[in-house]
Length: 137
Image (cartoon, rainbow, N blue to C red; front, side):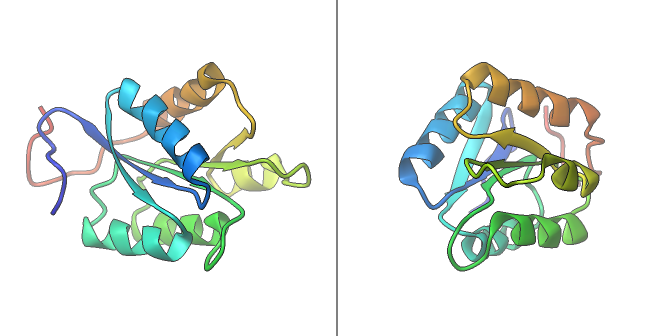
């Protein structure tokens, strides 16, 4: 079942750590998003396709089992190029420039809520909404 588009934006939160996933979901809900979640990249891809790309924001950890967040994000970007994507990681060796060059915003874990929400605001501000057959009023 596709979540209601009446008043809320839809975010997909992907992280294999339930604590981090719940933290990100709480921040996004407080920011007006309806959140759906996945534990890994494979599950996330299934949800994105199930909802037909009706996802307004994708937030994913990079390091996950089954399929890492970067690979999953590249698949989503190919199929749904207008979906804003934020990748998060606690690994020091992540190269933010590589992620930014691929069109993804990056937030280093651990992060302050204001830092994360600033990244959300940034990607949502530059987003061009896709034409959908219904109103998001």
